[in-house]
Image (tube, one colour):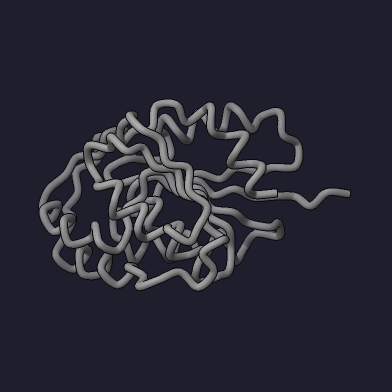
Amino acid sequence: MEEQLKIIYLHGFNSSAESKKSKILDSYLEKEKLINLESPNLNNSPKKAISQIEKIIRESSSRVCLVGSSLGGLYATFVADKYNLKSVTINPVVTNHISGMRDLVGSHKNFHSDEEYEFTLKDYFDLQKLGLEKLKKPLNHFCLIKMSDEVLDHNITFAFFSKSYVLSEKGGNHSYDDFFEKIPFILDYMY
């Protein structure tokens, strides 16, 4: 009998479990009987978001894999490295991108829920603590990169994941619009 797999999808900054990629993944996985998808609405505080993710992992009786986009990719990388799990990251924030996120300190309105919140200086410093010098097990990570990402420098991402599995493609954008086409690669990697 095959082992049950839980995929935890982690959305990006100012997004939610209602993100386009989360819905695409959920729709694709409806026919997969041995895969359970969980897409939490992550707290705006990085420290609290990591606690949420760790709680889901602790409470899972299945093998867990993480999929994260943008800031969710940073969370997926950090948690997967800490717990020796597999992660798939989509145009992820990596350590050398974090300094640029200082500009995000201030008021925001969530794209999906219209919730207004503050991303504080403390949140930014907590985010810095999630930056890894290097990965303990680089082959536990599969990174999908679009070279025309208008938000994050793909060269920085590629350098960080240079010893991991990487699918780097010309063109595209930060939203990774052809995500649906990559799901079979993601599932092959997880199994």
